[in-house]
Length: 130
Image (tube, rainbow, N blue to C red; front, side, top):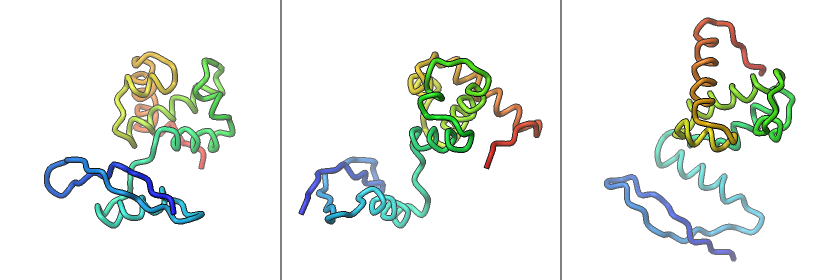
């Protein structure tokens, strides 16, 4: 039996945090169980992590995760990187400075990427690969 001490937010009332032991069954996936409890408790899906979004975008565009977060400036990498920045900004609670740090760039790059992809989507000129 493996016991882990995890922080579980108590959102019924004040947003205080308490420590609660979490039981991890042998061979079980604690993250999936916690996600299911979150959905049941809050009636909505958890937000995706930036790492998960970058992996999805890399898979969609057929590039590696390292290419997306690298310093490369080739055209075939810039669109996936900007799209990943836009998705992270819209699907997580991360700020532009935080997104810039993930991609080893200044926050203004994230601001530009979000405005650019947002404008292309609004004009109907951007279609992300499925």
